[in-house]
Amino acid sequence: MAKLSLFERRRRRVRTALKARSGGRPRLSVHRSGRHIYAQIIDDAAGKTIAAASTLVKGEKSIGANVDAATKVGTEIAEKAKAAGITTVVFDRGGFLFHGRVKALADAAREGGLEF
Image 1 (cartoon, helix red, strand yellow):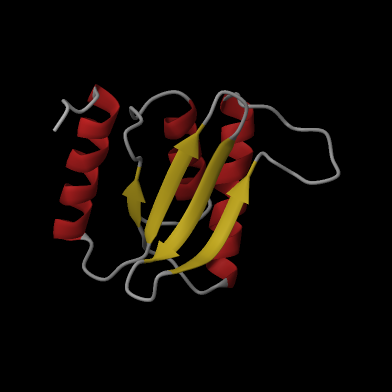
Image 2 (cartoon, helix red, strand yellow; image 1 turned 45 degrees about the vertical axis):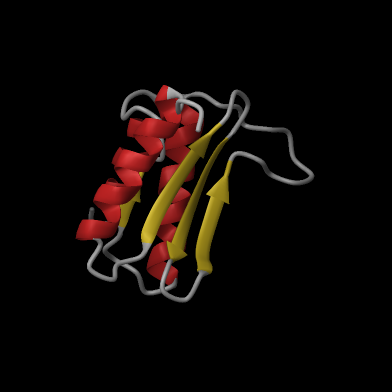
């Protein structure tokens, strides 16, 4: 087996820790690319996505992949979670470091009413 990249090591370490302390709560998963940032609230027990938000908006000009866009996505995912009746989640940053856009999304989601 080939050596894992640092990103894959971080992703595996974060996911293992999440499974240990999730307690049946849904998971707020974050993915960021060079152009967009995506957030999903996933119920792992049922294997379903409950809510999703991203900077990728069909039919409109992209709002970019900066901290301001991540803040908007965090606010939007918190609103959708409230509408679905979810208040507590487990934050899954994947292999991404918790700073910049990922931190801005998390802070906006917390301000929007999500607890993690």
